[in-house]
Image 1: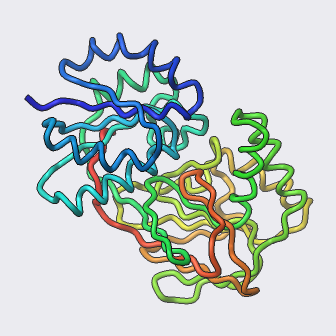
Image 2: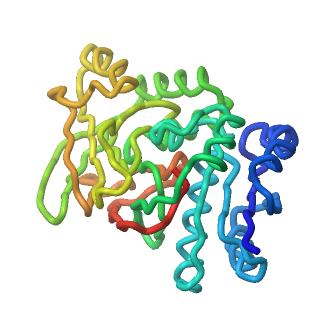
Length: 301
């Protein structure tokens, strides 16, 4: 008999307590399941390999967007090693940002999300992104950012992962950040050259705890929504900033939007461009390449 496997990230918020409260309800919605609490992201690949022997066909990730990013990378490796083993991925948001859930209309309340994912959601093939930077390659399922985002993430990690600390981290970064001088190519064609505050590569719609940076992004259209905010005076930035939470910044003269399958961002100064993938910060690289991988995984949505 096939079964559902719940993978719990104990480092995502108050997840241990959340799962203790949630697990009795899960048994009302799922007949045959087991639970594994991870100790390190590298554990996930071994857990997925074991899922073949345990006759698992659904993997439910309980954690944040960063947890899902590790899940997607492990799942892609699993698909490469075991192409005949079909695993369906579901996510119950229990972290801080919950941006994938926001963009997909999954309830943000963990209990409501669990009931929806386990009883109403249906399997759907979605695209994912592949980022190549330096000698590294990483998949992401929701959003990648280059520019100011890595500085924001670092500040959030230091100040605490709650909404007000995130907003204050954004404002602090904006006050001191020096825009990146970059060249951007889309599908092999020159698109932009100049100084940017942020370049968002959206597979999903939302990033940064509710910033609707790519409001029109679609998970299964085979394209990224690329959104950049170029350098602008502080008075103009003050006008644009509130709009990004409503997604009404698209069309502003300092905001540029285009869809593409392949994105290349090159530093014009020779210094590494800061970046994050699904809210996980990286030191970045002088050149970052993003590629869409169409219909890569199946998710409960």
